[in-house]
Length: 313
Image 1: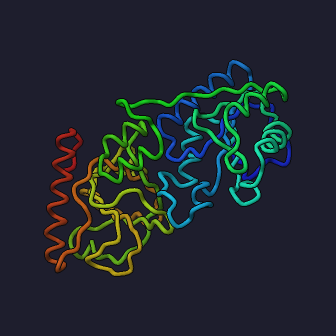
Image 2: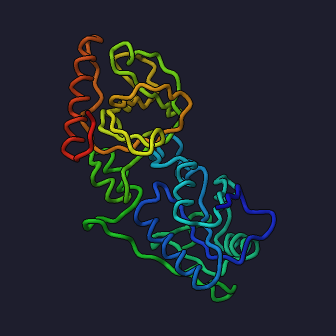
Image 3: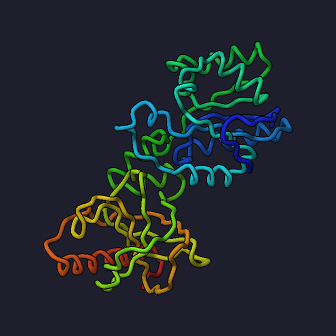
């Protein structure tokens, strides 16, 4: 897969294109990507996905934008896994926000990308003041030489698969529902960083992932599995939050205690999948009480994996 930061200087078309934010690359997105690949194969065209950075809602309302389900890197990895040939990452800024729907179509889609086949979601809006919609694209396609199609929403247990629905399920601690909507467990990927070694002192060493400016759509204590260290997923218990018992700085951190694992993995890039919420994050009066609670949490995670027939002993 080739990644283009902005519109490529040289033409990469003609191509079959889909456009969206693709946050989470959930089942609805996956259905679009599958339909795109099927049509592109029949037409003999490469597949392309256009997405935006930052998310438009982060641009318009940075203080109350929703938590992302995936970082840009995670999103690109999922698009690559879906078999997309070309990804165009457009910087969402004032210039793009002010671009009219007509110019977006004629300049970006037709002149620069040479789009021949286009697929969008049934709720797709674009252009200045979100004036563009599916009918706008259909009419332009007839005049400018590309076919345009819309894909209806995908329902999972009667609920529309959407980034908002996944986010709401995660906030509510409904990880099974989130997994159904995503088509896989929700996950966070990152590099293991050195920590304060407090977990090791308490008898529960952790692999720490700093979230930085990323706002996670969930918090608490979880039964998780970790990929990227061995050829199989490793069971673990994880804390995601601001560690109110040991710090007042409030920086979000993902701490993962792997069962029966004692290797030096600083710098390793790991993939943490969330399967079951054990409890909310809480403040404890002392480190002794915290240690007792960690033991209970680890036992709860082991019990969960035993029930799932995944050994955590």
